[in-house]
Image (cartoon, rainbow, N blue to C red):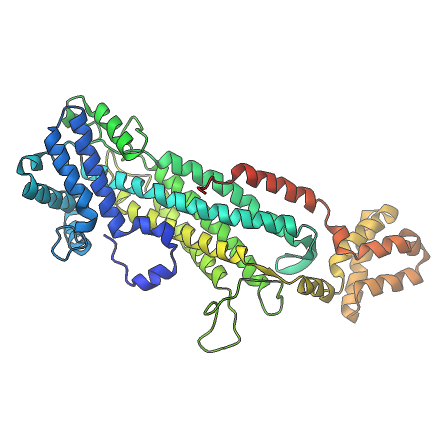
Length: 470
């Protein structure tokens, strides 16, 4: 069982709608669902008396509530101590379940966990947690994508400085920037939905995976169990094949990384010296214990924190592919915690970005001022292209590099330096007539294919958007 060093700090870096499905209570409930479905399926197929199966199912139905009692056999801290000695939580869980069933229906106790093994319980419980956690995460993804799509469409012609290697480059639009954030999210949504669907599979193989204890009726039991649990019957035990779990972990890490990328950009745009975009303000949000004026990018911080944690967690699942024979040693045993932590990362990052993007405030005046503050050098490429028609690209590039170097050394804006050069060089004046020069320093005129790119990404998002309940 997970015993966090600080539940308060853990909650700070988690999304409750996602992470609650990996709590101790959720784990016990999922394990109980497995045992109830096992007994009832075995009764349906004639392996277990129906009265015994019903008794087991009744006890399992009350386990989540029973676990909260101080004297319960299923108290998480009690199970945790026994699990460390046993090597798996399933052993003390099944022992406690058997005792509980025996107390209420002694004749049914012999049928608890019949034909199953510890990993069947743990892996299927993990799959049962994945379903609702994934649903909650996809709902947050839809919220983010819709917010980005709205920002991309509404601000497709709002110019701002593009930045490469943290320096101003050439103009872009904020709508185009939002579309660049949205494009990988569309792929993330597809990839995550696919990985979640692949992971919705029952694990029921018994001791070594071939269900040898069930006398040839294991296939029938598995089919009924899968139906009762709302899972897919994979047709073969997968407890030694962890690719589905690793694939899902990778998709969750990609989701967290995509949110971290947006968060980093927002944090940079919120810097005092930039001031082009701001997370929503609220009482107690983004303050400082020492500096009353501070407005910190807390949503960005949460996304970045998650994005930094996720890659190492995903690597743990990828490394667990190399398990030994039919059941690995020290590989799959941490999957509940590791995958739960990845859901925590993706959930926290996406929730924080959903809050930031749905309430994002832009500062177009700051965007314009920052373009102006750059001295117009962001338009040097446009001037080079215009000159190239008359001079050829090599000569035009050399001329503009020399002109920019001289203007920067003098502290002179590019437009002024270009006008001075034109007055002293008739050939340059012919290459750059007044009408051409006037358009060189219009940022909207330099947006190129931004509009068509935005339209393409919006179509991608409409196709990829996760379905959500209304």
